Image (cartoon, rainbow, N blue to C red):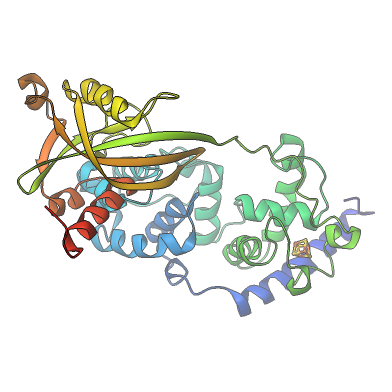
Length: 373
Ligand code: SF4
């Protein structure tokens, strides 16, 4: 967008700001994290909302804050309890970072979340977006928080061509966001931009007739609203198949803890893994059992089958009732990464949504008339 002078640019953005705030006052959703000014509670919401839908976050948010009502209680909690409270929400690195950051705030800032964006960015897991969101929403500072929604709105408002995440585009969009935030209530402007992007200025077919910015929006004026933003590279999705073995001993199930550095690190799950291309689920389970337990798993009947998306991976998961070919090797059993637990205990441990889905299928199978045990 080219405007003739800085004053014309200021007038344009302040008009947009007024319309945006008026719309936000009338249309904003009543969400739990909008009923508080507590920086800790706002921080938890911002971390949970990264890559996760509002409707999914709401019940987790309430439960998490019940368990960890203050930054101090979160910092003091064992990592396993924090992961357990996050179980099913996905992207578990967020929980690990939030926990580590809470401990660092206790240590470096005497338990007080710093209002300074640079200090916020020095905490584990706090990047430009989270620091900006916290600074503006919790501390009322004119710091932009450019999530995908806000970026899309700004990009269309200014009819910015090209990838909006490129350094060249950010050099234009970020100052525009700062100008929008100048004045009172920067936290409301931040949330209004994100809310407009979530409800009206949506990716594929923006609802321009409902938009408070349509009178000033350059993309709308030029008919580019469905074309912009341009060139946002999407990561190609990978389709994978996974097999899981449900091994039972009395009322308990065999579970293993994920090791390594992956997304699911430290979560407890039924033994399983990704199949090799063209590998049969039964052969795969024998191999995976050997790798993870030191004994091949012998699959019986299928107990669950579902699809799951993990970041850029689309998994087709098949779970089988299974047995071990021989008892577990003593060294594996003693290493601490294997347990026999009842379902209720498993649900108290950190676990992913696939584990929960398999447990639900098992419970439904038990409840079904005529089901065998
Ligand atoms: Fe987005 Fe349309 Fe509003 Fe422009 S007028 S900001 S394209 S919804």
